[in-house]
Length: 529
Figure: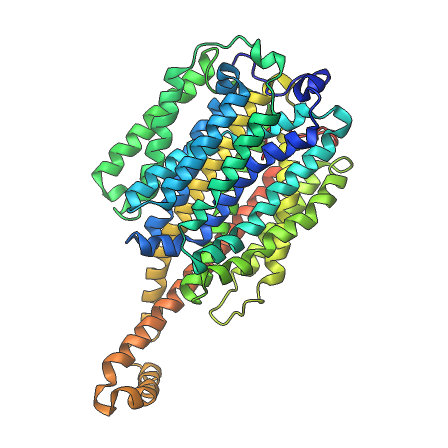
């Protein structure tokens, strides 16, 4: 792809800043990035409230997350071409404007369908925010200060997940889940003002000769990702491949995906140059970030649901309970920043995946008797382990690429992460529904209605309810109470299954890590976020 590199040569940092304090530029782009990351975290904790307000099931409410991720993924590969074609400043401001307006539409959504359309638009607007912000940040600082700038950038990215669940929970409980989206409006307006005031396009952006837009590649990308989104969203509801239309959608997905791969591999100036996958490290790194996307997005979605649906926590309380993950990441960032220049990235990745896998396996022992502090330390350690994955995985993946390949590779790398996240959320939601039904049948087979254990529980419960309903009217409410408890126990085991399978995925990733070639520590990662 023409002019694929998103970052300027080192001697152009002064031309990008043009006498403006680079930390003001950093603040401007960080606002945009912070807004995008914050919104993802806020939405996850408000899902049960969104479902109730829009007359949707929890399974359907997860479409709010998956639709955003897929739309986000579609825009990522095209962000480099758009920034070169229209100017990076203009394109960044357009993305912030789209994201801000669509945030208002999300908050004002009267139906689930309207919400999903608004989320798709929001995802399209947010897709380019982090790569563009990172490129501008790198170019605005001289080489000697870029490490400090990226440390601040990374710190901001991990602070947003800390504030997101807590702020989103407080807004949801105090006002409405709609304010979790409205909060983006003042942030977006401030970001637009600062970007317009402080950011200037470098000369190479203005002078870039851009190839014609790859219409066929983009159309194929939209079709296969769109079909994937529809299948993931509606599959559980319509019994997956038991429905004829899903089989046709899957056929369209495979056909468009094969065409996309063939077109991107065999033609020049394509939207995504897949030949970058010839590099062994980048190919393995892309596979790892895909699997990691499945693991991290599933965990972020599933854990708040457990606290809210089975334990009855409010959104604010659930947000506080899961917030230590971000605190753990904040604690880990300085350590990984120090070690990344001295230690083989494969060792750091091994530690990160093992830590994430072991803590997720610990989640697999979860019961309905847990207190708000029971998982405090494991959640904190999970965040700490995550910090040992994000930076080393990009160091290893990009470490053997030429600088001119990084712009194209960045879009593909983050596309894999988002697609993995969307698939992971859908798989987790499906497993929660289906495994709950399986465990309910297993419990009924183990404790049939005619068993002495069941009859004793029923009798004890009827005695407890006698004061409320009278001796003659306690059978139906007692049976209802026991059936509700049966559903809670079955759902608890479904959550256990999901966590245990996610831990197995992390352990599998440990083996994949050692297929990477050794990368010289200290080469700065680019493009990943």
